Image (cartoon, rainbow, N blue to C red; front, side, top):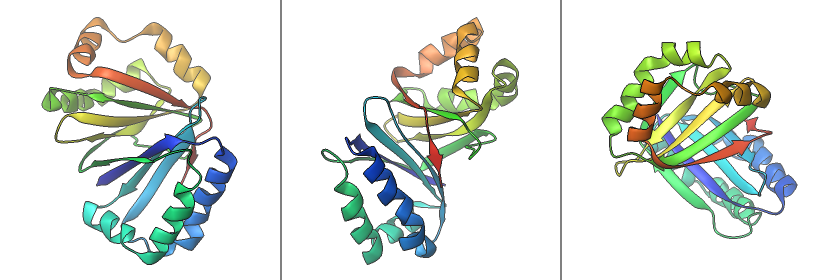
Length: 194
């Protein structure tokens, strides 16, 4: 799997969403390998889109299509400045992955100096399900330099906040502190999915 993250600020969220929604009919039918996406805005106007393809090659082939380029020009015009792109060839799915039933999505971006340790956390999915039953699942894209983007799909924001209150067990907290540095958290209160 391949993930591309698109993000940037927009003071016209309704216009951006309308152009984004048009992709499905205008461009989507010819996008070989497209698996889906998770999209939303933070409270301060940051758009984040996490798009999944079966492979990098299929994603790049889609980007080279004239109809994709025409759509991308319209989409880019809805941002207040430049869009930022992050590409991930190393992708992991945890628990049930993303879900169109999620009522709340949190995007976490940061750096790890221990990619193997970071990925090893995924091996404790059963423990996560016990500790945080409101977590449906998610995705993690990790770049060669250790930068990452993680999406976590929750049943609802209120359930997520309740789960956060308890905090992880001390050993899990210590591992997280060791393998994740400089993490930034972005809340998508009203996510949409493709």
